[in-house]
Length: 263
Image (cartoon, rainbow, N blue to C red; front, side, top):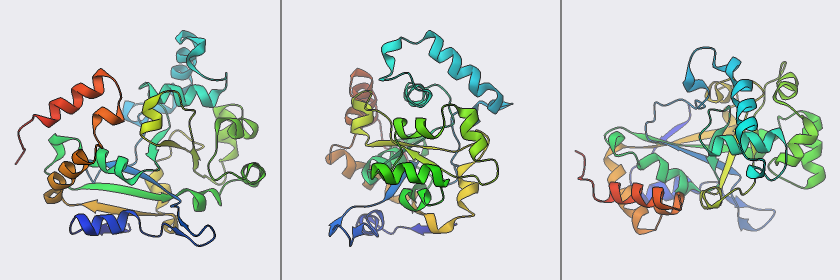
């Protein structure tokens, strides 16, 4: 596993924005998706996997009943991919994993859990453009036709109209799709969010990535640096109040802000 252990705040900034220069554009435009975890030992496990048991058999029932009982106006269009993104956003266990374009949003989620302040955190960095070079040709052509770097619900719907159809595409050669959700509310916008999606609910993404080491790297945050990083993020207004607009986010931020420092 390609881990870099940072030594301080300045070193962390260099690592987060490493390889972000785009020669073609002449701009700093990273092609990385970031995911922050409070414990470096945590796998890239979906909320569906965390149900345990025969979780992959439950997926279709969860999504079917979510669609049945949710208000129709909950999604911008009646597409399984919009429904899946909406379900993930509101806490239903799904095969989607949350990622962000923002390294600071990822840092927030790597340092916000005070109960894990005594263990090393990690930022996963995956190059979604390189990952999409491994997509089936049909989907790559759809992306190229749109001039897009990430998949949208509309593009994905032209490739597969159901989870079962997506799974059949990946039976011989698994792949990962980085999927940009519709802007359902301010949380998705403020978190600069995107999802990853694989053609099997049972595939653990980090196991797949180990066979494609050119696609990713990990930035390990020593426990000793977490409080400094957390304080500097708070001063930069990267807080629960911004990540989760509303009274629940405000309450989360105030609760943490006034909590005593853990040893």
